[in-house]
Length: 185
Image (cartoon, one colour):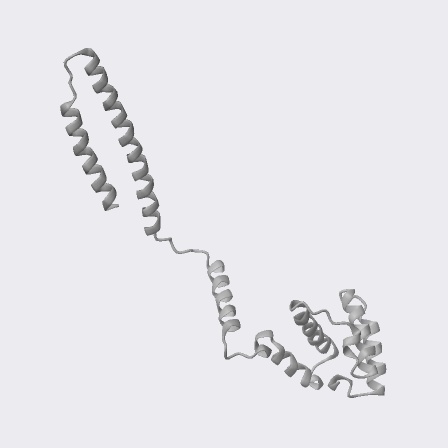
């Protein structure tokens, strides 16, 4: 910016000298003088517009944004940053980051939960895998024939948005009476 001001000051001095040496005795000389004066005026108006644009751009960098009065928006921003802090924390294991630790705890204490909450935990597990791009099928649950049978029905019911859970509970009861340790599988 200071170089530009120095350039303008030097140019003004040069133009003063030029205008002081131009002849103004005849009509033709006055016409040449006026033309030169108009050219210089246009040049300086162009400099002025560029300088105004520069000053406006610089002024925008110094503007302080007014704090937002929308508390919901601020709370959402805080929640997003808290979640990001949790995800990027190198001390948290991937079990914690994905929420698997909580889900495993809930599954290991299945005897305290009811049938719907156990199914909800299984659904959350499947959702976490789908979030990572892994689509599990009934063949992925071939630990025992009972688990595979239950997960086949569970995945069918889940695909229908849990519309017919009666079938799921019937299959669970049949398997449970045959093998009460089904959940531990």
